[in-house]
Length: 85
Image 1 (spheres, rainbow, N blue to C red):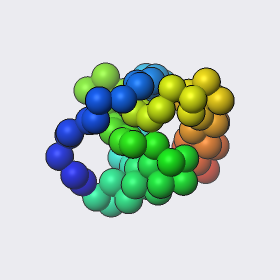
Image 2: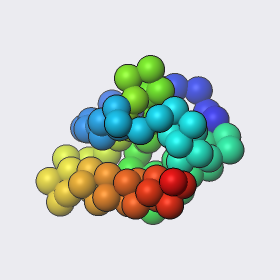
Image 3: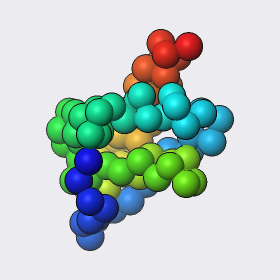
Image 4: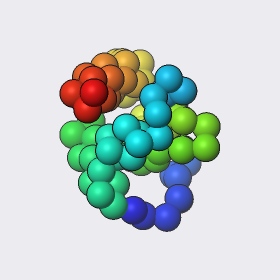
């Protein structure tokens, strides 16, 4: 996975405190492949998994967040994590 280097952009995060670390790591994928896919698919500037605080951090434009990109990603992630159970 790339080093932590967030851009100067609008920020939001998704709390995932209710998910165990093994499932979070599976969701992130080998070398962060799934985070790269989320970044590309949702046209975000940067996505990072903060394992210590169990939150997915998102950086993008203000308009993306106004259009609900955070909610779309949370729905997608929770769907994927359910499949791991």
